[in-house]
Image (cartoon, rainbow, N blue to C red; front, side, top):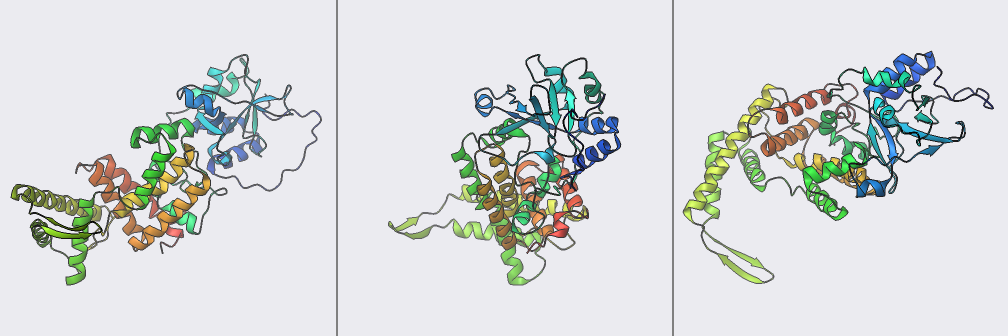
Length: 418
């Protein structure tokens, strides 16, 4: 069975030079050129296939599938079900959204009222025409049914076309590269579809409590201002920065703990605050409250030093280096939040680009190198999630760091941090 377009009335035309956007399109293009349909569908079955859905229907019933069918004059009757690999998705539009599934799913859900043809990457050199009705659908659906377990593989993925590779936008996108490597998404995809419109909405709702544009804007502003990371973390790290600057070099953890206690106790004696409303005098804090705060900060300093020791052992931090700030935890997430909001259609492409650039500029002011930035991000993530278990919250990021600091195609090796 041929999976090419119907030939009647369409004389062969030499294809122009074409650069596949990513590795999956490269494999499909080469397999199609050889006429190796087994390799073509084997590759297609391993990845996500995106299709347009009705936005109003998805908003009303998030778990429902509301496919929007297309038109192609090369197909009898013209009706088709267009599907796209990740690198071939069009730029996001406000009212045009996509969902995804695996190859075999399309054969399972097909109904007699659906189009008779599914077209993969329509109009591209790696397109294929799949008869969607049984028994013909069995010839391609079998590849999905026989596909090996689709386990998430941590790796660096880059858009060769359709995503910036250099410049301020690429720099800001690279600030979110740890999460991109961890999640297996394109690090330089600004025109973000992510896990599809319903998936991006669920991500923001379940992890962030974001269900409106206004809530997305609020969280994005907070992240860009580094106001979502703990002020206690930054107090402890800022105190160490001050000690290191004043005395030079290594800061003894014992001295750091004692200095923190001294500062907290000194600040607890009461103070005079001058504001537009006049002069306000605050009284001293109860001793029990002060000592509890001292104990908490000293315990935090212990956690920080143990995480840093582990990061040095794993090559995330160089010897005698320490984390200067956890601002990277907010800025790296801001780089991703900008894109998540676009994928969920809470924001526009222009808004996402502006936020990404701002995240990159702030990162360059706060850190000296990609390695320093990465260590700050990983420490913030671990202080927030890991509770000193050194589990997946730490190990996944340490592995993503290793990939980004070693892969020849990594933005961290090809884009100057400053």
